[in-house]
Each structure stands twice: as C-alpha cells, then as structure tokens.
Length: 542
Image (cartoon, rainbow, N blue to C red; front, side, top):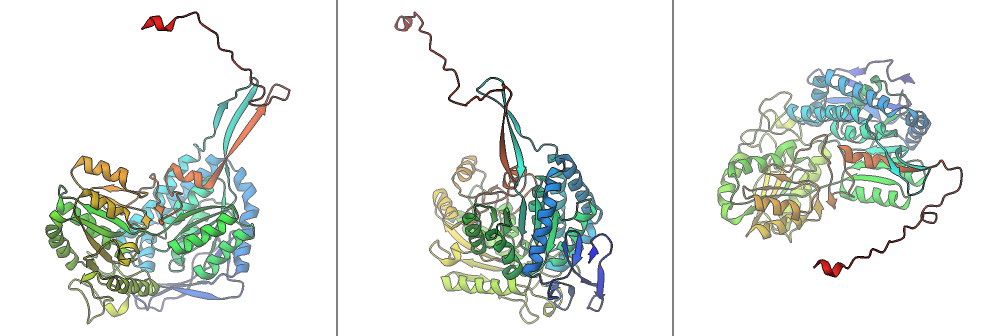
C-alpha cells in the first residue's frame, strides 16, 4: 500500500483516440491507496467518445468496505475532538486547492460524464462555494446557554457528531453533491466512507486526493469504488450490522425507499435526496420569451439529467399556442455535441450507456401512456441526427431532445420521472387548475411559475407542495447557502446545503450543571408563586 500523498496519478496507457491518459485508480482507506481485496476492477468510459477509457478502478468487496469502516471508526474519536475552527480551516484549504486546480477538474468532469464545460465549471464552483461557506461555520457551531428554573444551576446545549457516515451520490453532479454531503459531515466532527458513483470514479479519486492534500487526517474520509448494487449495498448492509451511524444518499426514489427502510428499523439517520417530476407553470401575464428560455434550459440543460430538470410543462390555455411556437423553434435548433471539442453546445451525451438505455425505456413509456410525441427520434446516429448535431455520432451516446404534448394527469408519463432530454406538456384552464396539476404528481422536489401577477406568485409559492420554487426562473439551480431537497416522493424532509444541513449531521446534547451542592429536581422543587388578590373593582373601569 502507498500513502495517498506519496505518489502522483499512475498512468496505465495513453493509447486512445485523443492521447488522453488512462489512469490506475485506487480506493483510499486510512490514507492508503489500495486495490480491491480480490483484484477485481472496472473501467470508466467517456460517454462522448466511447473508445476513450479514462481509468481502471477497484470493484470493491465487502471486505474493502469493512476496512474503510474500520478506518472511519478508528479516526472518529480524534477527529471529533479536533476543535471545530480547526476542522473549518482544513475545509477552507480544500476550497483553495479546488480553486487552484479548477480548470483541470472541470475538464476531467466533462471528459468523464459528458457535461458541457460551462456546466462542469458550475458544479466545481459549487463545491468551492460549499468549502468557503463551511470554513466559517466551524466557528459558528453554536450551542446555547439556557436559564434554569432552579437556582444555582446552569443548562447548556451542544451539537455533537453522529459518528461514521456512509455517503452515496449519483454521477450527474460528481463534484458538487459529495461536497454538499461530506463537508458539513466532517465540519460537525463525523468521519465518512464515500462510495463513489460508478460512472465518475476518476473525478471522485481526484477530489479525494485534494481533500487529503488539505491536511485532512487519515481515516476521516475513506473512498471506495464499485457498483451501487454491490459496493453501495455493502455500505447500506453495514447499517444492519451497527457499523454506520448515518446514510446520505442521492439517487432514485426506489433505492432511497429501500435505504430509508434499513435506516428506519435501526433508528439510524438517513438523508434521502431523490427523484422529481418538476412542474413549471406559465401564466398569461408572464414574459413569454423569458418563460421559454427557462423551460428550454430546465428541460434540456445537462441533457435533462438533473433531479431538478423540468418534467411537466404546464401552459395556460390562453398562451399555449404562442408559447409552443417559440418553444419548439428553440428545441429544433438545439446544438448537441462534445463540449471538449465543439463550441456552443447546449448539452452533450448521456452520462453512460446505462442512462441512455433507461432513457429510451422512458420514451417508450411516454408513448405507451397516450402522449403525442411531437419531437425527438431516440438515439442520435449519423443517419438519424438533428440539424445542429456536431461531430461524429458513432463515437458517443447522444439523444435527440424529446417533446410530448396532450399529456393529462392520469397518464403514467405525467407521474413518472424520465431522466433525460424529454419534456411532457399539459394545458391548464386557469390558475387553480395549473396549481392542481403542479401538485398532482407523486414527487415534490423543485417547481416554478412564470407570472407577473404578484398574487398568482404568492398563491403558487404557498400552495405548491415542493421543497424548492422558482418565481420567473427555471426549476433548476441551487446555491451553496440555500437548503436543497424535496417532499413527497422526492425525499424524507432532510436538506442539503446551508446552515440547515447541520441538523442532518449532528444531534443536540443537553447538559445540566448542578452548582448548588444538593439534589434539585426540575418541576418538583420549583417554588410556586401565589397570586396576590388586588382590591380592584374591574367592572367600574367600564
């Protein structure tokens, strides 16, 4: 084994179409670079150029996960005892290192999952912002002094860390989301075992190396690679074994429910950030051009591969035709390609072949539901491509933008998330009908309304059942100091980001400090205050 800071990235090969290096990746357990216990590996592939293999990584076994848990448990007492401002300083170092290496990390994220350079830059910047925000929170991990109802007694509250946190995140935001989870976790004094996304292991490996360069002690963050169905499941199984004190998961609602069940029966805290079928309502008073821009980006930015992507576009009947004319003009002009090699691209490939396969199943579901497909022809090929597709379609896994109209709330495609570049469109008779449709799906993550009627905006934001709402803005977008999360099928009420996330990674400890030298019992030893009768005729005051 080699310590994480004692070697650079090991290059296996540069033999690929663009001369990019193929890296030998490792788990990071107790600060050591380790392979899987049985030697099994998997590869990371560029979805824009399928012949471009980025690296080879351990397919971690249960023994590997257990070793990572052992390291996290061993590191916990020392890290929890480290003063919170010191922990914050290390987090600040992480932010500075991310800034120093930002361009390289952005290029790596785009190469590994196919996001545009602009979007990758936003993801990495959010990780930086999270570090900067929580650096100072290390000096504000406040408890409270509480007045006692008894004399010569002091009462205090403190935040305490939970213990070992299992971290499982999806690959669509491989820089921002793990920092959303792990930065507040370690700031509160917890240690972590991080299962990287199967489709973004190299970026995760690079980020974990940066975390250790910041001065993070060995064992505080341990990285294991592998599949969700094996390595991720081993981490969840460890909850039943009493070895994990917290699970934080971003992914599908079905998997989130399973994790919630395991955590619930063990009384272990779970943070579940799940799927969405995010509604966007457009009213007649809206600036239509602005609304078209918001709906277009919400539906097709990141190739629709965001949990906050626009799902149901709800258009008031009075502006339906005007909106659709402008919206479809933009959809038909969409520029698609590999942002590393073409400019002006709105979106790139699907995150992987698996995501592409699942998306095409979703398209079939929309058609089977009875919706009318008015744009989109499945997977892009050189013989089946939109006018503004750039490059060689045979190299990667790209999809047309898809639009379905004539959608009603009884249809499966109205209620189920389609993770990819697809928008389903409904018609609303009035505001009340539009709000009803916005609330009618089983999800409640993000939402939006375009209106210049302030009463409508007010009624929407108090009537919508969602964790987030945009007014004259898209369903997408988050800032590092604002709470992120959903309700209903989109989550269990916990939040990422901002000061609110601290509740998810700490518990309140109440301390009763008796200074009187004797036993005093709250409620029982409190002197009652007798009422004093006043000789006043209150009826005369009338």
